[in-house]
Length: 394
Image 1 (cartoon, rainbow, N blue to C red):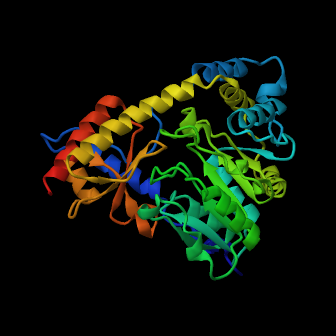
Image 2: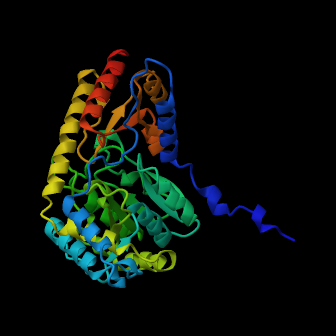
Image 3: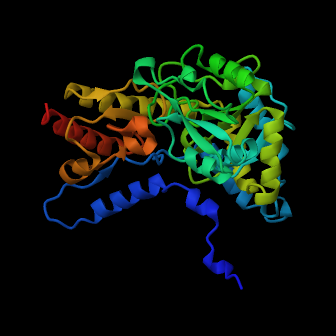
């Protein structure tokens, strides 16, 4: 008799180590260090928004939670999301990107955009297919590839080109099933440059693949507006876009987001959702709808807060002679570590946690990602410590 309790499904062994779990563990160990005289530990390694959601979104959620007279709020929500949220998404895309979405066919409401990444990989690729991932790129992209049984092919992002995708470098080899982009970029903070999306859409048409753009930091471009890939002619046939309120509205714990774009791939994602989930709680949908329908003044204020923090941190590091990539968007700074200065030494000597660059791909080796999503006083203190650590190695 086969004891299936002893057989571990192979898909579990394909999953990479959870990068952010390791960061959290290192931060917990540093905080717990009881040695006398140690400075307080400051964690710049994790991008967990410190700014709260807009008050009108919280009010909409609270109002929904108090609705107990009917089963609309606390019963099962529609699998495809409430019409009001889908209409709010379409209105937001029209106002911000000039893109007219079909609210019925081109929008999928997902229980968190990280879940959306996994669903997009499962919907686009099969076992043995190839998925192009930005290198350096968000560490959870490989998890979606692993679940699909597909193979990763790195899509090089080089500082000399402003961390834009080198599509010529992947011209040979098998045609991919999916290519992934992310601007403003996590971790490099680069924004998409003119022509990048046009080249990617043309690539997808030419190679017969899907294109997924992760617009998690869409309204957090500091010097210029972050475009939607769907603004490009021809994108609607080959591309979807993931949109996250986690960073833009400070709703990281709400676990709601959406995918928009090419009807066929959106339909596949919705099919997976129909089997994996029972929709997203109505209160969360109402809160997100309120945020989307507002004048976005709160988003502009949030962006200015992160811009000021960026200027402080980048100024301190460059003033100490550090090499920092241009921080054009998101709430991260991409810092090339001086020789001999490792994330482990920063924790031990400066009492500052950072995200090691190699966790974002082979091209991240020697870099570190710093988060701006910490209180101003903590960021100022951390900036001074990191600048001192840098100057000591000049």
